[in-house]
Length: 256
Image 1 (tube, one colour):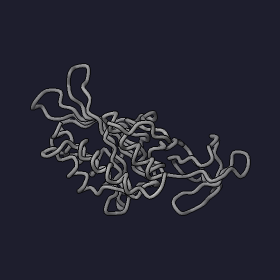
Image 2: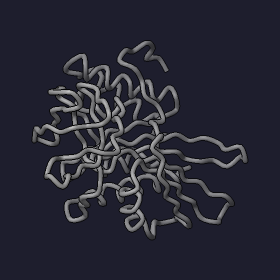
Image 3: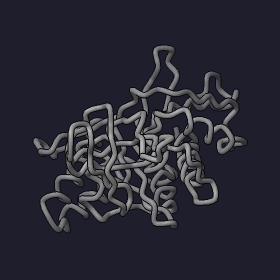
């Protein structure tokens, strides 16, 4: 699994590189928050630092954050399509300022020393003692709860000040093959789920990715070529992907 951890770190960094400004694609999803309902099927939205009013044929939940495709009608009005609710895990990221850099992530996943799960448990224990408010305490506590479920959850921040989130879990398939599952979130790519495994020893790893949007899948086709140790990459679209683990708003048990 040591090699799989480093491969996931490389995939995560490649995904981040695909979100850079020079790679921006207008067909990619945007992240938005529903501020209020102004009229029947009309809503005030917050997109970045901009507030705008638009019509949605789908009923939206006030306060909820979504990914969506945004375009314009022939009359020039803004149209939303393919709206997908963002998981609470992503929305709650703002409750804590704690982030790992890409180098810190790579160091954490370096299994030449302590187990990454044990490393993160120690880090979270330190951060919990310094939590500045209830929201941050709950967020960090839920990261500990994910460890109880054998899921590593990492809040990340890159050099371009963009945030991301990565979850990982090792599991054994029905055929006895060890797979490393992962789940990543990026503001303008949406959520991405994947797994890495080696069908036969020495054959080379296979990477499978599922994205919420076809436009994201199309972008990643060109960004994930020539990954070290990856023999085959398959990318598909699945609007139903979910986090590997997502806790509620309360902490029931932090022992583990």
